[in-house]
Amino acid sequence: MAILGCIADDFTGATDLAAMLVANGMTTVQVIGVPTGPLPDADAVVVALKSRTAPVGQAVAESLAACEALLAGGARQIFFKYCSTFDSTDEGNIGPVADALSRRLQSGFAIACPAFPANARSIYQGHLFVGAALLSESGMENHPLTPMRDANLVRVLSRQTEARVGLVPFAVVEQGANAIRRDFHRLRDAGHGYAITDAVTDAHLREIGTACAGHALITGGSGIAMGLPDNFRAQGLLPERGDAAILPEPRGMMAVVTGSCSRATLGQIGLARDHVPVLELDALATPDARALAAQARAWMEGKLSDERPIVIAASAPPEKVAALQQKLGRDAAGALVEDAVATIAADLVARGVGRMVVAGGETSGAVVQRLGITSLRIGRQIDPGVPWTYAEPGGLHLALKSGNFGARDFFLKAFQP
Image (cartoon, rainbow, N blue to C red; front, side, top):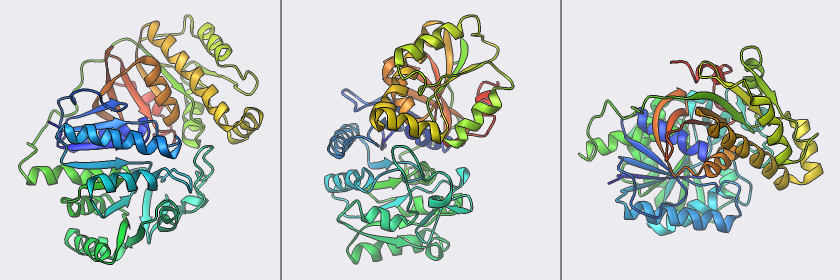
């Protein structure tokens, strides 16, 4: 039975969290959508939803359904995972989903900590930084679906919930788990429902995780999960494991598909151009998913190989994204790219691709759903937050990459032995 149940608001975020748990010794399976039967045999189960940009009511309903399935499967703690850049709007969906889970679990209080220092996301005095810059000044604030132009997380979360939002500041976190736990109690006793919790280093995250041992609900990014497995070991619920990341041997041809328009992904495409075949589709010039997929189908003939990947990108710089959204509307523009990339991914698998990287959270959700994948067993990390996974059914090796994650050479090194 699963001892930790996780609910992620997008597919790449789910694999990011699952990778953190595997790296810290928990066997982990990612389930696509709300489970309808018995949970897989694993220490942790991560339910991957496509709820980050869904209507609030839908996001809440799906998250509660996932929570019920995880509790029925034995989960002793629920983790609500969202992006390390707190991607949301003032209407949600982080606050409304957290509120609903808190009521169901009768937790009364939960932390909110999206920090992930390994990917340069830190929280100081309640403000979210990307590297040395505030999120609102980092170049990542203008996400096409969930812009984040306010780095003050206490203020952001307060706009999404009726609960009071407090802060566990850096000076307290530096003192370790006991001091953090005391501050949790102080805030709860003062009537706060949530605590934004500062974290600048992995050591901070581990101490915060230790302090959350008795919490019914935890909310945050994947970083906070590194401190949770030791809690279960201390309770005698989790054995020491050295084989949590083992997957079947990868086989088949190699490909990358991407719909992400993040700066990191655009840089990865740029580097890949110098080393492997790259097709860059132009959704603005051809705003038709079938036509884009046909272009990719014609181009890939004779280029697929089991020695090096090909890259098919429907990504675009910000000005082109804005122009496409103006032409079609925001939702239609996103759906166009997702549909095209999902169709292309299905074509690639039909032609014998057995190892695939998908870049972009919404894109990954569309691809996984199109391929009919029901669960992913989590393996080794390629870069922080991005593991290889083994897709069931079908046996496809799949890496779902958040648009902002990965080193510049990610599309190349992902396929190295």
